[in-house]
Image (cartoon, rainbow, N blue to C red; front, side, top):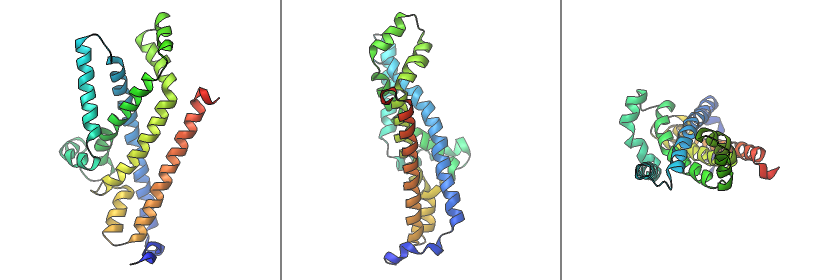
Length: 227
């Protein structure tokens, strides 16, 4: 034990570290794909149903908002346990990277949906009204006004969400979901191997920095205000 226990690199199985790193990246990318799709749909519904004069539409907005707020408020580690039966029925197992996907998506999609809704509300209302005045259909407004105008904010929000998902994968690893979290817990903490914990931590930090760099670069390229 002691500080030297963090630097016994000969005790690290680098092949296992590499496969665990890939599992973390895979879980993040796949879950983020579903989160992006579901988050945009939920955010669009929240935006389109807000401020309506129709009682039915306001009711729909209220129901969606409640669901979003509820799932956004549940701590992730509790959500994993809560969804174990659902996960078992959906993917056939509660262990491994695939088993982590349902809880990752359900936890992050509401968070991203709120970011999407906020991004749509920040669009200049005059741009939307001009499109409506020119006879644009709702579909055209969505795909030619809302999404393009809010794209920098959507990408920035997706970057923040992806980084949160990386942290969630580490927590999911504590109950056997695989990835660096699982490696750090089972092969590091339980085996009293501080070096594995340290290396896994450094790799996760590098992954976070990489996602942040990619996200920031994309935002700079698509944000017309920076040109």
